[in-house]
Amino acid sequence: MADRDNSLAPSGSATRTVPTTIDVVVIGAGFAGLYAHHKFREIGLSAFGFEAAPEVGGTWFWNRYPGARCDVESLDYSYSFSQELLDEWRWSERFATQPEILSYANHVADRFDLRREIAFDTRVIAATFDEAANRWVVRTDRGDEIRSRYLVTAVGSLSLPKAPEIAGLEDFQGRWVQTGAWPREPVDVAGKRVAVIGTGSSGIQSIPILAEQAAHLTVFQRTPNYSVPAHNGPVDPDYEAEVRADYAEHHRQNRRSKGGVPSRIATGLSAMAVSEEERRAGFEKAWQFGTFSLQGVFNDTTTNLESNAAAAAFVHDKIRAVVKDPAIAEKLIPRSYPFGTKRLCLDTNFYATFNRDDVELVDIRQTPIERITKGGIKTSEREYPFDLIVFATGFDAVTGPLLALNLKGVGGRTLRDVWKDGPQSYLGLLISGFPNLFTVNGPSSPSVLTNMLQSIEHHIDWIVECIGHMEKDGLARVEADEAAQVAWAYEVAKIADSTLFTKADSWYMGANVPGKPRVFMAYIGGFDRYVDRCEAIVQDGYTGLRFTPSGGTTSRQDRAVPAGAR
Ligand code: FAD
Ligand code: NAP
Image (cartoon, rainbow, N blue to C red; front, side, top):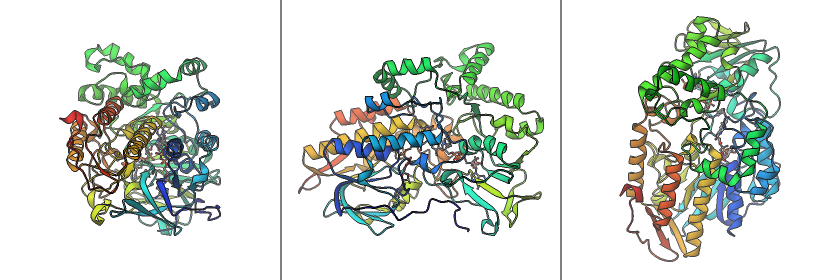
């Protein structure tokens, strides 16, 4: 396969002094890693970080494709931990662009002086737990070895782009790029014949803009997606004033919501409890409002097939109304899974783009891609010539970046082995057999189903509190109890099975990566409920965790089963 064409190769030029021992190693310098450094400094622990990219920002460093922006409103997609930060930062758009979010991450790093403890251009390639010493031994691709008492993975849930899976790429004589690792230098699109493979959020955001720039754009679609208009624009001054008037309350409400940001137009009713006319009016209001409100305007869209079908039919009609060619509209209509069970997309002019003469849609379920050739892409029907191929084919989500760390826990067992049938984790925070390891937004936490700045802050606050507790009580080692972990996994799976989400071949289910175990990888019981649960566990004396005192033998705590499961 050809090398990935991007300019993000390690520069190797950063000045860096990596200590040999430290209290905490933090892997990743996206929003999670940055906040972790700030918090560890606050409680007086020394922390050192590694980041594969040459700068901070994580997602917002790597995903520079045209049109990249958040789809949670900027005012909510912000840290809440510092009133000063909230007061001084102004977002210009309802859904901020990637460059603006990256500036925000850099501003946070500057303001809280977070870069000095991070080695950039450095990838962690292995970490092994030294059982005798209760230390993690972390190794990097630049030959560093560092021993730490705690290891915090802030590696992101959507940070490992899937490698292109299509045969023949090494023959292609044009250029190819991935949305999830977009080059830092501008990619020349003007006048080019461009292919986009993939119609998830990244494809849907970039396609309208690429279409404007390219001479001709061909979109290769495997599964149609549901997308709603973002209605982006300047931040609404009235809403901003309302939020700024009482941030504390605003963020409290975010934490009390199901997804880390409350719906502003939810009816609280079943879609089936209202008349046909009211149902349509509700969906229409949500469509006009934007955000994910089409999923939440009625309370049973993702659990009740009938309500779901009504929402799906509503979107199908919208697609037919926008797309002029009925045959293209039918290709764009999702039918093979319930509405909202693959991540809903927010777009600006996505469906309308298919009305352009210079845009073509290829349904690769009907005419599969056979291979990439010297000059383009060959399907079962014909060969298409291209200058540029854009892979918007997504990520090895949630577990991928964790498995890539080559973690070895107790008894030398690898995480890859432990998770061979799917991930198991206690609360998405700790993994049995991997002591003193904390995973931010790990599998079986609400993570990717939330406004992730909320779930990041919550996880790091919890981790820092737990480590603070260990420091105070002279505890050297913490580990998830296996029975508690199994009970949690059971609960997570049971809730997922009570929804329609498990019916889709989504990346939530691992279905986008060939050979990946089919497991719903997030807790879907609601962020509010999850936060309560995590608090109850602390109140109960860390139910489900086992602590070992310094110099002592492991004392199994009696409460091995999570509070709410008893
Ligand atoms: P990341 O931002 O992914 O950062 C992880 C960092 O860890 C990366 O910089 C990576 O290089 C580094 N890393 C990983 N492995 C290693 C290693 N082995 N060694 C060294 N460094 C390593 N969420 C929302 O809530 N709202 C949105 O609107 C939204 N939009 C998104 C748009 C896109 C295009 C994508 C891809 C995701 C979006 N997300 C959104 C999810 C987004 O990932 C999170 O909101 C958030 O940015 C995650 O922050 P993080 O610090 O946890 O992870
Ligand atoms: P994605 O949702 O996984 O979409 C990938 C697309 O590529 C899908 O259409 C998929 O088809 C297709 N695909 C994958 N492998 C393929 C192959 N081998 N051949 C042909 N087609 C293939 O990935 P994404 O668009 O990068 O988004 C991932 C997540 O990141 C989102 O769900 C969201 O959470 C986040 N994100 C958010 C935003 C935002 O708006 N703020 C923007 C981008 C990303 P199938 O559906 O058939 O698998």
